[in-house]
Amino acid sequence: MFRLIYASLSDPALDGSEVYSLLAKSKSNNQNSGVTGVLIYGQGYFLQVLEGNRDQVNSVFQRIFIDQRHHDVRIIAAEDLDARDFDTWSMEIIGWPDELDSSMKQILKETTGHDELKPFELDGTQVISLLKKLVRQEGLLGRL
Ligand code: FAD
Image 1 (cartoon, rainbow, N blue to C red):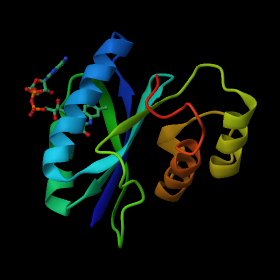
Image 2 (image 1 turned 180 degrees about the vertical axis):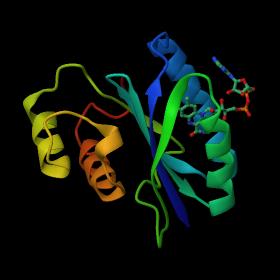
Image 3 (image 1 turned 90 degrees about the horizontal axis):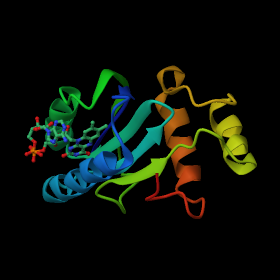
Image 4 (image 1 turned 135 degrees about the vertical axis):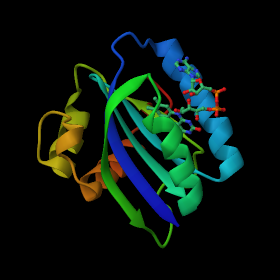
């Protein structure tokens, strides 16, 4: 099992419906290739975890890397795993709001040590612990 985490800058012209259609395509492709994961979108960033067979994750990432809907794609971590952390979703989204409520601020502070989301400064452990807490927050998963 393999995991790849990357962050990128989203195309500023992208709107919510385009992100939802990108998500729908991702879900169906990933279902076919056994890839699972989570995608954060907001404040001009994408931050994504892809888990699965090494070849499959690489193949998805090669398509993602050249996708015109984002740029400055930076790998945060790429590592072998004993088991997936996010095995429930072929892909699911968490919208990152411009204004954080107190519980999100607390989660961010606890897991990254920062008050703001700075994906390019995070390491893989911080991303996974942030995501594990976010996916447990009611109402966040699946929403922009
Ligand atoms: P098609 O969907 O038929 O696309 C063919 C080509 O057109 C591709 O090069 C595609 O990038 C491009 N394209 C399609 N629609 C648009 C559009 N609206 N605007 C610009 N170009 C477009 N794909 C996955 O399979 N799994 C993922 O987890 C995943 N996560 C992604 C995360 C992010 C942040 C981004 C930006 C893209 C993600 N994608 C993901 C999409 C991926 O980049 C490819 O677009 C997709 O995998 C191509 O699917 P396809 O081969 O079925 O081709």
